Length: 279
Image (cartoon, rainbow, N blue to C red; front, side, top):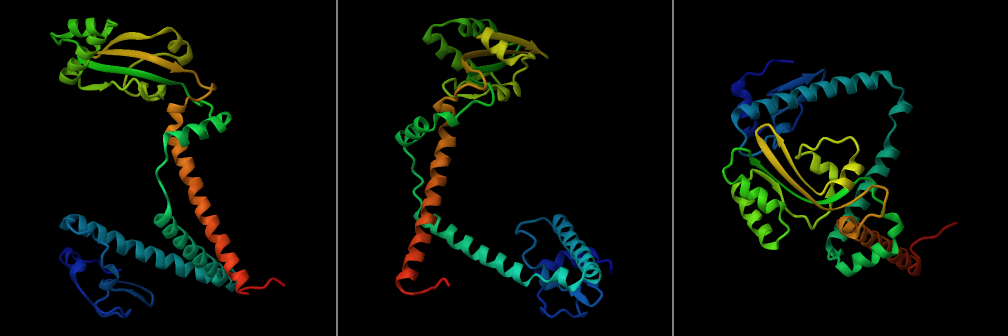
C-alpha cells in the first residue's frame, strides 16, 4: 500500500471524488479493488483536531486493507457452498426490518409512567423472586482531614442522636468533607461502600451485625461511618432496593404486550381479508 503523506490525509474529509473504484485518486488498493476518498466521507466527527483526524483516517485505511486481504483469502479457500449466504442475508434483513418497525411502534405508543402503586403490587405478587444476592445497607459517611480544627465538633455531632446535631453535622460535611454520602434512607450495596471507605473485614455479615457507628483513621484522613440499617444476603430483598428493577420489568412487559397486540391485529386482519392460507 502506498504511504500517504500527512497533508493529503488532512484534506481527505473535505475532498469529493467519484464513487467509481478506479486507480485515479485512489487512497489504497488491494488487487483490483480501490479505496477512494469518497469512501471516507463522514468518518471524522466535526470538530476533530488535525492530529486526531489523521489517526482516524490512517486506521480506517489500514482496516480496509486488512479486511479486503482477509476476505479475498477466505473466498479463495472456501467452497462455494460455504459462502452461499443469500438465504441467511434475506432472513437477517427481514429480521432487521421487523425489529425496526417494532422499535418505532414501541417508541410511539409505550407508556413509560409506572406508579408506586403498580410497583408495590408487582412486588407483592412476585415477592418470591426478589432474593438478596449481596448484603445491602443504609449508610452515611464522610471523610475529613485529620488536622481539621473543627474535627472535635464533627465527632461530637456524629456521635450524638439529637436530630439538630445531625443538621449541624450535614453543614460541616458540606463545608469540609471531600468525600461523603448522606442519603441513609436509600438501600445500597455494602460492597459499593467498601469501594470508598477503608473498612477491613473478612466477614461482612458479622461486621454489619456488630457495628453501627465507627471512625476509621487512615493516611491522614478520618472517616465517620454510620449504618442506620442493613440486610444480609440470601434474605428477602426489600421493595426500596428493587424499585427501579421492578419499574424496568413492568416497562418491558408493556413492550411485549404492544408487540403481541400488533402481531395479533396483523394476523386477524389478514385472516379476515383472506390474505394468507396454510396448506
